[in-house]
Image 1 (cartoon, rainbow, N blue to C red):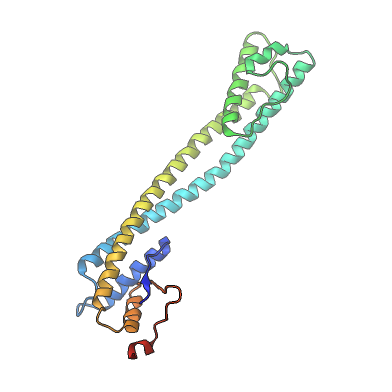
Image 2 (image 1 turned 45 degrees about the vertical axis):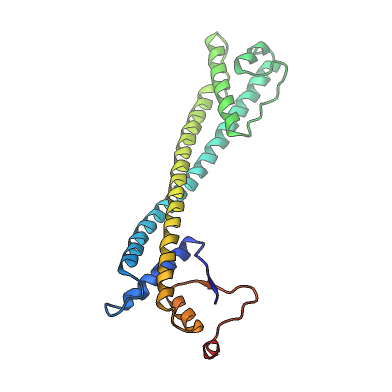
Length: 238
């Protein structure tokens, strides 16, 4: 006899549950293959699982959409910070700004390279350094950098930070919904096992092939072992 194997996808779980419930409902009140208690539990579970599945898929979709905007924001703020630092370094090279003022921006006074901005953390750190450094230098009487102004940099930096916080909320919501789905899947598997146990128990007196066919009609999933002989109508005739 082939062996049972539980569904490994959400759609397969739902299909197994619906099949068993539908087949049982077709029996009417005359005879029951599955107990009323198990059927009721399966129906209630279906309602909860489908609701949580919709919530998870919606939160995932929201996260993906938000991430597209977030990537646009980080691209812009990275570009503005980099451009600002390039203009600042050129002003130092031309002698318009003393190189000692680089320390206000946490920059190496002997280097004119733009810091690595490839990571989100670097963008956060250097955006903060640039904004605070420029504001401090101007406050002490220095001429502000133009094209881009620090105000323009700050606008994009603040938008980036806001989007980063929003994106984190989306991620947390998706993760929370996923964790709930994991718990529900385990509960669903337990219900399916109970359904299949009752189905197999009801048909236990049938010959192997007929038992296999009837159980499969109720959604039980079987697999043959490697090298195992397939059951056929002839198998039941000996």
